[in-house]
Image 1 (cartoon, one colour):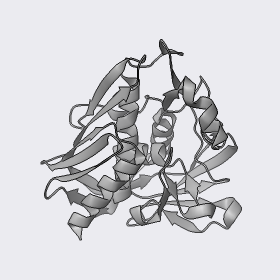
Image 2 (cartoon, helix red, strand yellow):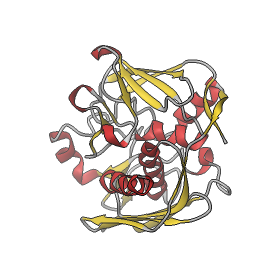
Image 3 (tube, rainbow, N blue to C red):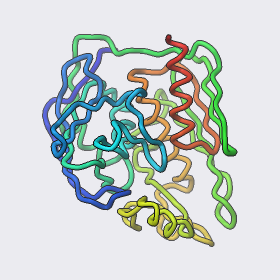
Image 4 (cartoon, rainbow, N blue to C red):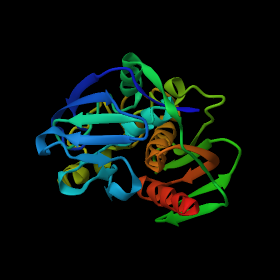
Length: 272
C-alpha cells in the first residue's frame, strides 16, 4: 500500500488527561518518508519523531523527547496508524496531546475531515519473523508470525470490579472507527488521589474517563468491555512507534505501555 498523509491542516484544542492544561494541536501534511513528528511551538519547534528511539517515559502514557518533549501521544498514533496515515506533522502549544473525550474517536474524525492523500512511496512493512515475548509485573505480551495483522488484549479489573475482559481487533473484519476508537481511557476510583499526587490524571473526569468503582463502572460504558477495547487502542498506538504496517498476531495480557514498547523493541531487533 502507498504511504499516506492528510490533505490539509486541522486543529483541535482541549485539556490534557494528565496535566489538565489546555493545549492547541494542529495536524499538518508531511512529505513521504517523514513519519509522524511532533513539534512544540512553545519550545522552538524542534522535530520530535514518533519513534522507539525517542521514547523517554511509559508511566501512565508514552512520552517522547525528554523534558522538553511531548507525552500522551498514544491515542493520536493509534488513530493515525489505523487509518494508514504514515506522514504527519503535529504542532502543539504545550507538552501534552489534548485528551478530548478520552478516546481516539475525535482524532479519527479530525483526520478524516482533513482528508487522506496517497503518496508515491510504499508503506513500510514489518514482518514478525519469529515469536517475540516480553513480560513483567504480572503481565505479558507476545507477537507471533502471521500473514496479516491482528491483536487481542486481556485486562483484569480487580475485585470487586467486573474481573477479566478481552477484546480483539482484526482490520480485515473490524472497523477501527466503530469498534476500537470510541473506547475511552479508564481507571480506578480508589487510585485517583494517588495518581493526582504524582502529577497524573489531573485532567481526568467522568466526561473523558471510564471510572471503575467498588460496584462496577461509575459512568456509563460505551461497550461492556470498554477497558479491554481501550487497551487495544493503546497497543496499536504504541506499536505505531515501529513506523509501519505489521504482519503478525499480537496478544497482550495485563500489559501496559512499558510492555507494549518493550515488545515493539523486540520486533525492531528482528529487523536489524
